[in-house]
Length: 288
Image 1 (cartoon, rainbow, N blue to C red):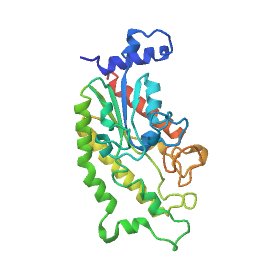
Image 2 (cartoon, rainbow, N blue to C red; image 1 turned 60 degrees about the vertical axis):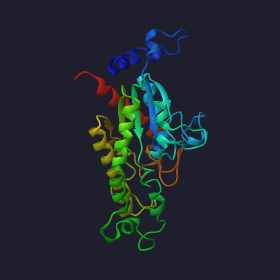
Image 3 (cartoon, rainbow, N blue to C red; image 1 turned 60 degrees about the horizontal axis):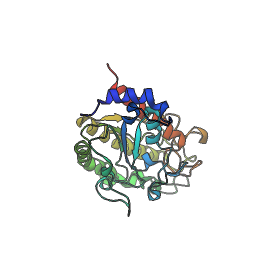
C-alpha cells in the first residue's frame, strides 16, 4: 500500500529543495506522483518555454501543472493537450500522442483535470461573438444562441454533464489511490464586458462568461459527487480578466498581447492557477 497523500506531501515539501543533489534519498524517491490531464487551459499554448515532449499538443513548461508541481515538490507527468476533449482521454488525439488516461496508474498520487470547453464548443464561441463595430451594426451572438427561448450552449453543457461523470469514474478506476482536483476555467470577462477594448458587446461578453460559469458549476457539482476537489479560479480573475490592462491580465483578449494564445491563460495566469491548485492540495491534505 502506498504512503498516504498527506505523508507524501509533507515529505515532498521537506525534500523538494534537495532534488538537485547528486544522490537521491529514499524520501526523494517517494515524491508525489502527479498526472495532469486536460485541454489548452491547462496546457497554456504559446507560453514560453514550450514543452518539446509532444509539439502537437502546444504545451508549455510553465503551464499551471508545472507551477503546481514545483510548489508541491511533485514528479509531474503532464499530458494536457491543446484542443483536447474528454474523448481524447480515451483515444489518441494526434498520431503518436497516447490517450491521456494512459498516464494514470495505481502509483499516481495526485491528478488535476481541466476539460469540457472544447466538448461544448466554448472555445469557438468567442470567435462567433466578435463585433468590431458598435450597435446597431453587427449581430448579437447571445440573441442568436438563445433565440426562441432555447439556450443552445446552455443545453449542450447540461447534456455533457454525464460524460464528466464517466471521466471521473475512469480516473478513479485507473488511479485508485489518487486525490483528484478539477480546475475551473475562471474569469474571461467582467460584467458588461469592455467594448471596444475587447470586441464583444456587453450582452455577448456576459453570455460567454455565463456559459463558462455554467460549465464551472457542472465541473464543481460533478467533482463533489465523486469525492474530487474543485479548484475555483474565478475569483483569481477579478481585475485580471481580458478587460484589465495588458500588464495585469491573466487571460488574454481577442488579440494576445503576450506569449499566449488569445483568450487563454498567459504566464501570469498560469502561475496564479498553479499556485491555487497547490494551495488546494495542501488544504485538502492538512489536518483539520
